[in-house]
Image 1 (cartoon, rainbow, N blue to C red):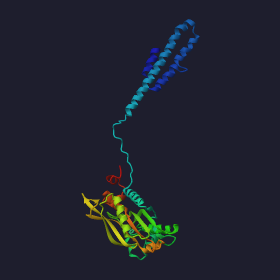
Image 2: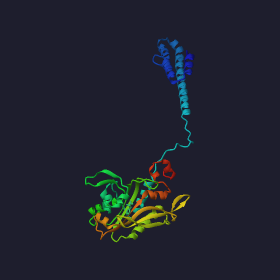
Image 3: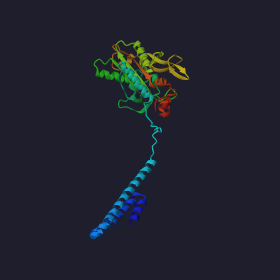
Image 4: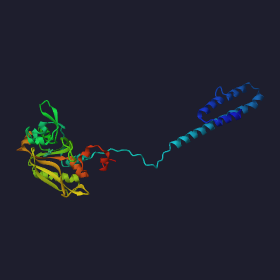
Length: 347
Ligand code: PHE
């Protein structure tokens, strides 16, 4: 009966049940479809009476099915919305953001400062031979300065029979640059380069790590003297620390590849136990330098009576420590994000 059909539709609790009911009543073999077919066999009078009744039944069942379907779909949507609530006022989950490491940052800053002064960037291999790392820098095999470098050696020699090692400084790039320049330019010079990179020594404490970073500078030209070196150092250190009041201390020193040699300290003041650049309460050694030794200019393939120059090697990690107030060099290479973010290098 009509009442029965409508109440079964009203009681359907899901869309599958509802679809089964639609097939049962209105499908090809459905009961209402069956009733409609009987109309053809009726007499006109009968049809006049039964026609509207059966069509009315089909209409009300169709309507009830649509209504129930809408209601079930709305309820399903309601339930989904309730379970997937997003509170837009909540803070977004933290996304870890990477950043430039302080050493890379300082390397970039230095490269930029020297680029402004007309220095090009040169490079050399970290796996070096002892000729470039020592001999050509005026440290023959028996030279005691070789022992001072705590060198990491490889067990095998190269094809030329040279001992192989991890470069102990960026100074071998001086030799490589001069030799390459002599090959490429008719005059061989002038030259004005920096060479940033990793260097290695078997050494480890709060201010030494077995791998650290240097930037080498080499200027070769006519009539170069110590005044040019001093001006260059002052200019780049003022630009790097972004202050005019930095104090430099130039100490006479010794390197086999420079004569005379000068070690350079930057003065600092202790503020709450932290080193702040400026003043002269304490000193931090940041670079070695000097006038390029005649013998080194010769090893580079240039005539030392025509060309003079100065060179220096900057400890990049030391500079970073001073600029950012860090006190343990080893932490630079621990990769601890908490340490990096403490110094403002990570989100
Ligand atoms: N190579 C020296 C070092 O590593 C630094 C230096 C470079 C000194 C150039 C003089 C000239 O200690």
